[in-house]
Image (cartoon, rainbow, N blue to C red; front, side, top):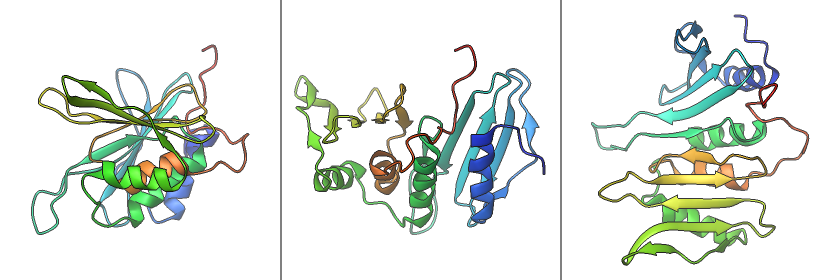
Length: 203
């Protein structure tokens, strides 16, 4: 199969294929935005990675899991964007999702404990009429942050992780704690390593 001529996207897809992931359908072109869509499934069929490559070179990549509604191990669905982080961080998140069993819930407690263990500092909570609206942790060098937005009656909430790049990574509320901490804590050995989505030319 011929992959799109985008080095970072090709590297992500090749790494997944080498680890036993398979295409769940043919590569297709989305009609409105003319993006090339790659849809891959994990060996156990539990996880999906969807990659879209746009004509201007911009790429989006999303890791997700469908909700499990039957059987003894029911679990909510979740998703996380991978295109704002370096390739090795994206692969670390995929590995964490593949390796993790049932995720401790609520994930916020597990994430908070792991960040504290690594020396991250929790900021003062943002509250509104006594309700927690936002909780944030900063890394020791202040180059990264993790923000948690609890769900309420009006919003499903979620997570955001900021690293050295200009955009934060968006994460759904029920994403496993291991995936969140992998995105926040994985170190980049080669600072020149590109992100999954390079900046489009002229942007």
